[in-house]
Length: 234
Image 1 (cartoon, rainbow, N blue to C red):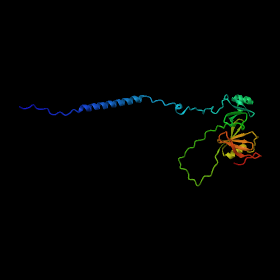
Image 2: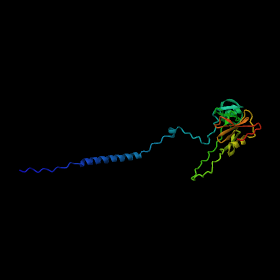
Image 3: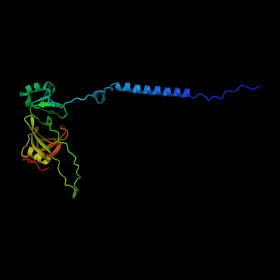
Image 4: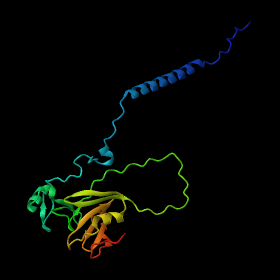
């Protein structure tokens, strides 16, 4: 008796796992694209204000920059005597002059001070100079120097202080020429002082000598002055 024919061996089904994996990959790709589209529509977060990063920044470059508030208390001198901390207006009244006739500057301690005339107790505030021009680098190669360049004294603006204001007397001059223009032939009485300015340095003529200061407060001797009021070359 013949046995019934057997079914040929069926191969394992592999299509279903591949389809599932492909579906999951497509779903993940779709979610990624959707996330990118939705996140792109959101506005970028606002940058923190400058004050939170580097401290409060105050612009003091307006027309009133450097102006003295008439109501702000400062050290007031009348005929060389300290009379207290008064406003600029009150100090002018005590001196019997107009407000703009007072000299305002710094004393030896660096405190803001007002007096009828600048002297050794008051150094006037420096003048406001325009910003120097910005040097433009040349694309040309530098010329070859034939030898070492001779030493050249630095040049600067020369200012004279008087009547409560600064007046420029020379530009692009050296320190020695500035001192001669300001003080040569002029002597100061004991306790008095005459002020000038060269570049970033304050010059002061007192009895018997010319002094200089780099910080508008501490002065050192720059040159002696002869009894005939002449000053030797620097």
